[in-house]
Image 1 (cartoon, rainbow, N blue to C red):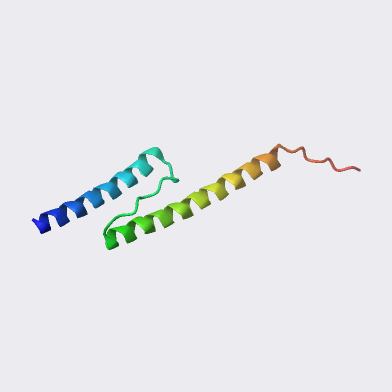
Image 2 (spheres, rainbow, N blue to C red; image 1 turned 90 degrees about the vertical axis):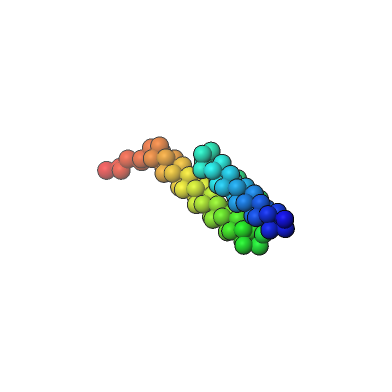
Length: 83
């Protein structure tokens, strides 16, 4: 009985983690975070996934800013050289 409840709890936690990752993947929304899980090992995994998502989100933000800067620089008129 205790083993069955423990097993179901682990399975539920893994399912929750899978659902979070699928949601992030399908929606391409890197702002979604995995929930805290009741089992130490699974919670460590969830927290490391969240850390990876934080870094990915920062990288995407920097990339977008760099692309916007390039677009802005390319749209500015180039001064003509005077002779």
